[in-house]
Picture 1 (tube, rainbow, N blue to C red):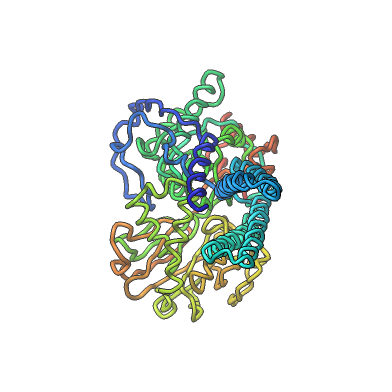
Picture 2 (tube, one colour):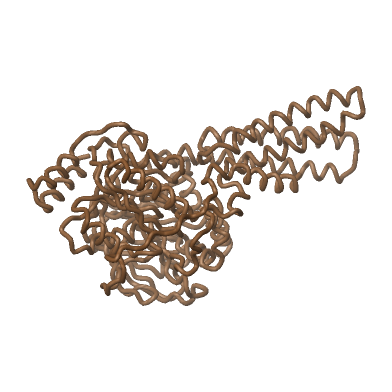
Length: 596
């Protein structure tokens, strides 16, 4: 049965591959305009750049989706569907086998055939579903595995009574245990989906304008869907050009740095918006380049999520992942989008890897979570093929973090880390093994570590010395929390618990003594190029707010919304008519964002 599951999982993944992207050859990349030719000398970047493949490694014509990517289920629903397909084949085989006996064998064959048909129907339902494992799908899978476990329990009892041999009895008991674990795991995913997957950014807001759009794509982000997405966006750009609509320009960040792309596009279009197609690291990189533009016009930035966690996309309402069939709706939603603000925090001090400063948008972590991120980044750099699927990328994070259950490498963190918030020393809990400083309410793929009102079944103790305020990405306040170990971290990321709340403040200082304590900022850990954690020396840092970035929030009704209000549209139109200046535009947009 296990071999059948593995084989049918490959077949099912191959059959369902077309719903990711139709395999096709990447069209020849257009020549870069002369204005984008040579990269000019620039100031050192203050951001951790996401890893990009070199241009030499890219083939001029290659399949948009690697064939081996279609051989594996890409979501939990597809895995459950492949599992059900395996049982459909297995029970069909036994139905044929027992039918040769006649009499009672025909009755048993009919029952097995019915079970096979049910399993096959469930396999089609789960395997062809394009959604992530939500509450309904998870509960369906849990019920299925529970029923299968009960069936195996009854079969094991029958074999034990008939004394048919310990080999069959042992096999059935192992299968029963395996399916009981699958049922419990599926139920856990249902609880996680109910408690954790919040709809960020649902407040009412204002309408945008069909401005020219610059799409910046990081082909190496997430499951490497960027190449196929670029081809689809170029088709959309050609359609817009033929129809006389607002222009869309597609730039691959492997070929052109974002600063050069922004400068060139801004010279040809006095007003425009930016669409970042990538993960949180790509968003942070582009925001840093937007802030360093010399032009008076500062474009707002929207997100098309291609990364693993996509926390910034969740906060702004653009979703936790991207489905290819939603591309046209996402592009249309840009014209209905609302303006939002994002605080940008300077991280300065004596940092690992010889760094002295950088900029943070989402969060930073020290200790157990940063160690898992470091191991994950090192494995991805060494074997990128293991991260070709989004589901596998998340699985590796769990696998690489699990050894800390026994190692407890950072159990001495409270004695080595000094935390100061707004000039006040904040003591760490005695069992603290990980510290997080958050700017946005989404952490590690949609988990709200701060808010205890989410109804987590296992809430953590609150250690706040002052009254807490609700977190926001534009309030100029950071939230500081900690976890007591990798098990507590897993509970918080799954939505079963929340982190221990320590403090909120506008200036945070951290000092770590000794070596071997990892640090990550916005999902990008330090020390990826080195080996082990002993190479990470002591460090100190201070976080201060630098300013805000203009972002675009998804429409109030979601990506498929059909209408909105006309606030930013009037502001952009007034600036186009010369009635207001760039400074007045930004001031008005910021006021609208804070009022929404």
